[in-house]
Image (cartoon, one colour):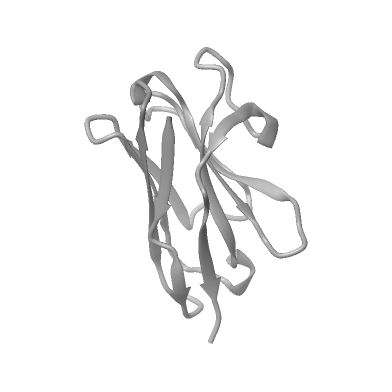
Length: 125
């Protein structure tokens, strides 16, 4: 299966971006999805989780109240709406598939496979 992120770019602090990830090659609605990010020189960390139906959502504390994850199972896409962006949100953002379709909520990098190629988000003046 393939995953491809789109929507990254540069934005000023306080601005918004919407990331999208299009999946193909597998039954999208059978799998939960996650968003992670990796800042320069740092480990890849959890950002958001969405269950197969979209009814269960989890967010990292650092983005709670600012980011919203959603999915469209008819279109095989998962999105991340990012508002009130801060310079510390700068990172490469990745979408990923929960590797175990029957697994519990995943917060670890090892809970997901495969991964998209990532999209850069830069927040600065």
